[in-house]
Length: 218
Image 1 (spheres, one colour):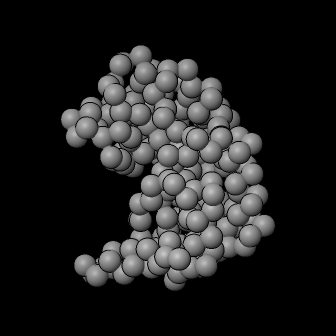
Image 2 (tube, rainbow, N blue to C red):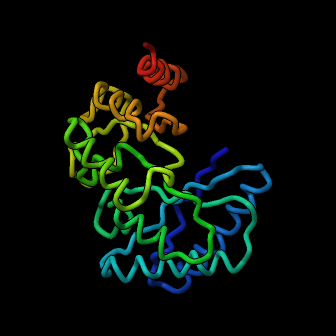
């Protein structure tokens, strides 16, 4: 089971009060996960604002080390890639790898890959070469065994827009065929998938699920 941590958490925050409150809020989220018997908590690490991203990433690692020292429970954190807006410290796979491997406390269980975020951050998933380059970066920096979850979403905005706007499967700029190629790729074909597509009516989720299920037929 997976739960998603609060978007209020900002482990990059330079402001001491926000930083400390973020650590304690994440600890509460981990406790909730244990109460629900969830395996993982998906986390957006936060934004550095105008600050140097490398320094902010180091602060994120320190925050996760502090959280580990608090012994928050059994559930593990999945670091989610972000869309690359100014201040993001986890939009590139190499960034995620730095946090994953420099963290010393063992609280991180792997990563969650969001297709819309990857596309917005500049990974051109809607062609075979772009998908291959993305998988190669996973192999180089993260290791496929560390990909534990996929957030499958199309994107309202174009590649490298740095804008996080999810779209229905096949209705955005990534496209149906590219998303199909993504989920059936050997790097991802056994990874659990969660949709975070727009929902204005009760029929929206079943429609998106129907499209994705067709990807696996035949």
